[in-house]
Image 1 (cartoon, helix red, strand yellow):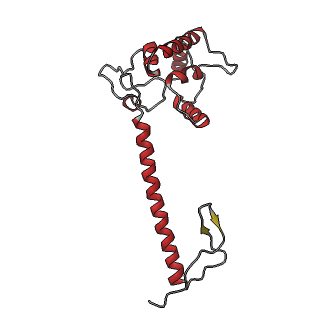
Image 2 (cartoon, rainbow, N blue to C red):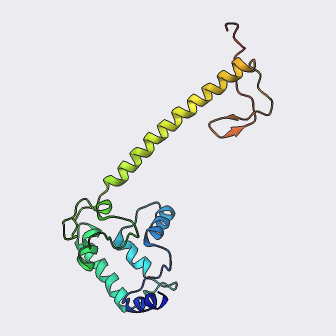
Image 3 (tube, rainbow, N blue to C red):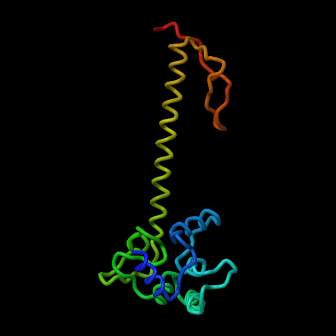
Length: 187
């Protein structure tokens, strides 16, 4: 297996320089560091540069230059990437890493693996919406738990809170007792 992998690496015309790091992982690191999403066309030169900033070989430099020129002429960076590297093969999307399907990156595809020219930005909005719904559910759960703790303190502990009982505030956790009402005389 080692010899087979070595012979396959020798066949690579343009090796990438990320090592064992996947393109998807590098893309995520760049996204968190720069607070923006990088396209496949932007990731290509990043993943083929040496530590000194030069590209790995002449072919990689030529592809990077062609990609830059095509980006200026195309409406979408994905169009430029597809025009330069060809249509996608079924079950594979170049430049995004393992486990990503074509339908997750593009709006539509034909049976031969070609892609449409528009990028799927609805995927990110759906994720944001689901996170907002989850946030609202978490807030409701927290409010319910706070009400239950207050009820327990008022009715089971006579409204007295141990001095070292932590309470939640908007800023975090403090050690000040929570405000409770005097115990009710009604059982």
